[in-house]
Length: 245
Ligand code: HPA
Image (cartoon, rainbow, N blue to C red; front, top):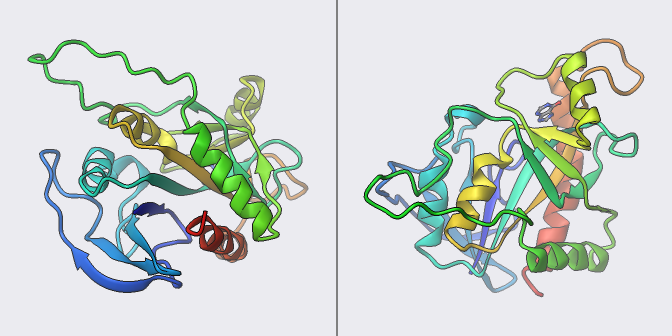
């Protein structure tokens, strides 16, 4: 089974032939919503909308522990996280699709581990490669087969949100070596790693990060959603090929 976590711009998977929905309780509380089970091209899929069905849970309030735990119960062979980001690197313009290869975590106060109980031996999870290399390879191959242009690699900064960044903050991110900035990749990727899930992200660039691009004004939200929708057409197309690999 392939697990897909949908982000902003992907609260449902139109191509999914839904068989059923299931509410799952976990030792960490409830996931963002019921898991949706179904098939794309005869391949079993489990889908979860990260921000809830009605897109009401902001990034800092998502129960990442429950979400990953719930998905792991169904032993997915891969977990694909769809995320939206602001582009910092010059070529990451709105509606570009990227498969990032590295993360810098700027979040705070989120429940970021399953090893936070004092009754367990201390565990340091290796996070050298935050994304599963094989799953990334599959995403890139699927993109090629789908004839969709994607950028291979990039550093994804995860900020706390839900506010967007200042220009100075984006300048600092750039000095840190960041290519794109979003709010949901962490602790999601780390929790997936702790559970041994083969997890990779596909990022849709929704906007230029603050102070980037040619516009000096903030971008209206409707414009961001329109751009995101365009990128999500590519992402859906890629996922359609991924299920067949
Ligand atoms: N900053 C942080 N997160 C985001 C952005 C951004 O500019 N765009 C989409 N998610």
